[in-house]
Image 1 (cartoon, rainbow, N blue to C red):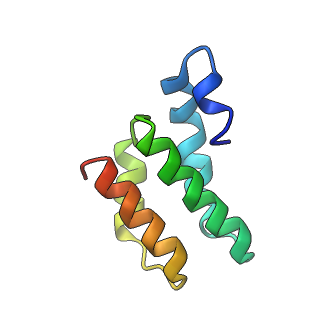
Image 2 (cartoon, rainbow, N blue to C red):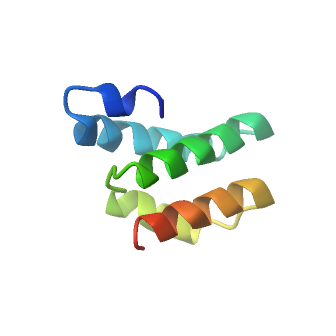
Image 3 (cartoon, rainbow, N blue to C red):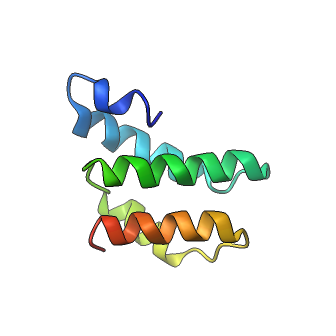
Length: 82
């Protein structure tokens, strides 16, 4: 999704739809899926897409067993100024 959101007619609206879906994928049992979702979140936030408040609170409240995911989420939160 990180490749297509910036190309949408309304990137912020597309990000508002994509970011919660990506956050949901962080609970997937497949490590590659979780890591790619975390990467997409980080890339979109760094590109200036706003991180919805409810997604921020969910990301902050979760303990990550996968250090790669945890690192990417921390970087996304820092980039979002949260």
